[in-house]
Image 1 (cartoon, helix red, strand yellow):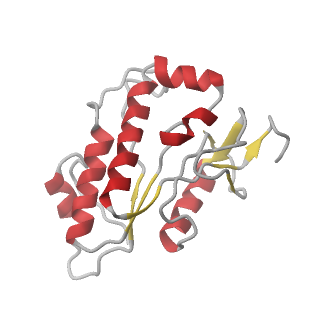
Image 2: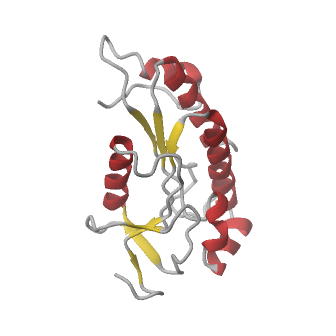
Length: 189
């Protein structure tokens, strides 16, 4: 079941209205794939969404989930969010702190704090560089990303498949799995 409708996730009433299901049962999980909007497609472009947009939106989703007894939320994050930061490459750690990407990562960190303190069951997948490749098996690197290396990638399709699996299975419940499909810096494919 997909919940759709007009509105913005930063407004609680819009999120609550998305849960009005016309007699259908509530979903088993909520999927959130938000990121801060930027002036251009470049990840280094200035953000145009207000600070805290993702955290407010997720807080609204959690409120609506509680109203409708939805037990799980799966929120797409990124390698470098939360306690996976030390396992980013040195270059990406610099980018994370000294470019406009800092705003998005700070918001990702707030999202993780919001979810973990909510008591709601969650999965927060943290992929590295996203590609447009085909679905490939995904390898996990724990919650912190130890051993992921510098050049890890994963296709958007592989991430989507993992997100759907995370909704249906309990393999990653209450975790922040760092995931990748390839990593040439440590020699596995």
